[in-house]
Amino acid sequence: MHKRIEVCLTPALLHLYDISNSIVVVIDILRATSSMVYGIDNGAAAIIPVSNVEDCLNYTDRGFLLAAERDGEVVKGYDFGNSPFSYSKEKVEGKTIVLTTTNGTKALHMARGNAAQVVVGSFLNLRSLCTWLIEQNKSILLLCAGWKDQFNLEDTLFAGAVVSELRKDFTHFDDSSVAAEDLYQLSKNDLRAYLHKSSHSHRLAQLNIEEDVKFCLQINICEAIPVLVGDALVRLKYSVD
Image 1 (cartoon, helix red, strand yellow):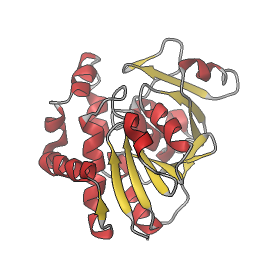
Image 2: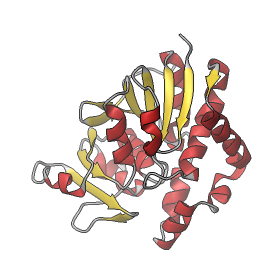
Image 3: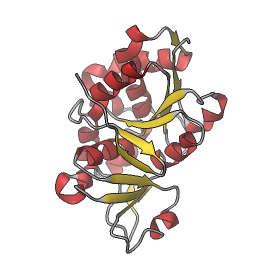
Image 4: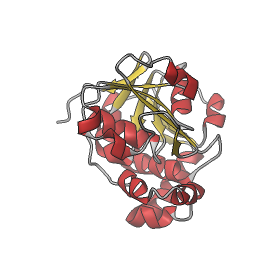
């Protein structure tokens, strides 16, 4: 089998890809998948991604933490949104979190129907994710959550980082992979400076959450890889030699 790496630059293009035999890595760097990785790494029992804010309400009074974000802000009446600082050990250890976000949870739901397996990636778990992906010997689709179905820079940069790490183990790349890797090589020495150009960076600046952005651009501070099992993201069980 020829193993492929492909980069889907926005969920709006996902229908163009055959992912039935592929591992799909969902990427929403600012901030959903970074917070998911951090939460699972800090001992959250599970994170249940739901599509709509209203769906969160179905989980009220069941002992779950409810998290909802729209357009970068916490939805009124919810425990928290998708800031990684809300997913600290003290807050999430042993807990199940029900989460809905503008882009990331939508991408997860779109991927889960057809993919062989769905995992979550961020700069925080880049090394452990890439180590595991190489061991799986399967084709990979890196699914960028983007911003409301449009291309965005930060998710594409992370996809490029993964392509860069995996290049020696794969032979087939699509043009999106080549472009993503080129962008990453251009920006990797100072990701934050490069992302000052991005539209989402400007949106987040208006919300005064620069610390969140810096946090999400840290590399290899987590080991956990969240994997979608049924309706929930849980910690993938694997050993790193």
